[in-house]
Image 1 (cartoon, one colour):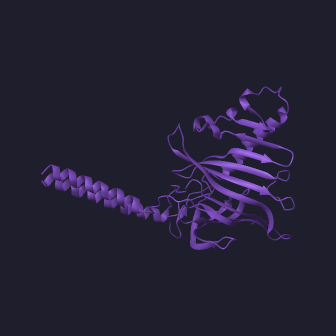
Image 2: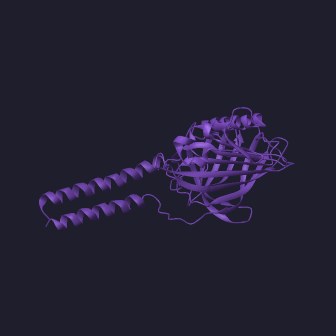
Image 3: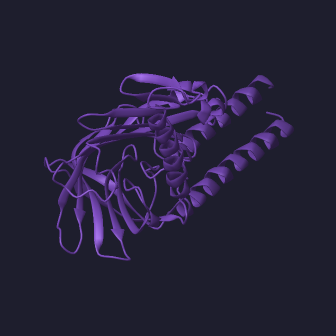
Length: 320
């Protein structure tokens, strides 16, 4: 190997090692925002309400699922669909303000590479014993098109219209208007404190790491197992937030969350209203984590670095 090639190899190797070390140090302060959830994973649980007069009242059975991971034709980035299904109990408290509903389903579209929420309610469905309605903009699978709510598909009692095609003469036009208005308001409200998704984090962190969030960042508090009501234990990372929400539709003072350690999927949360004496707890019953290829940090960087070094060595040998 001649002197120039040898010097170049040493320089590249040094830069790669420095890059790895710098990345590891940065990771210790700010948790990566890359999501590693797997499509088809889900958690089912109870949503319990407690205040000064009620203790662990069952509001709803809930399911949080990684419904789909898809590629956006506009940005060419992957988005993750997190679907939240609420099955309200008729005799339970309903501080979510959905007293007339027996079922509500919301799908959030989240960028996979940085956890930012594109739309917190890309689909919205509400149903009771006599009525069902939904709004869907996710069908477009294109972020540029999804920003135009005129293209939202609204369905009431099985009859669908695109909002841009309605002129006010349609039967039950007021109900369609109410749905698109609710759709816009829910997105605006949820986006104000879910700019980063609460449904999953990158699980490859350390105690005291900062987790990107709004209106203020979260903190990794500890690592501990969470046991479902069926007796299954899952190793989790505990993250604490303030002035936000997970499954509630309004922010509260403190939110305590637990994320499964393989994929970072949220499997438990406790939302505490510090201005009062109430709280809402999502307590897991069943957790299903679909298999995927897991390579925790910093091994990805190390692997890439070794490949790069190998290429340099091969090129150097060819020039002998």
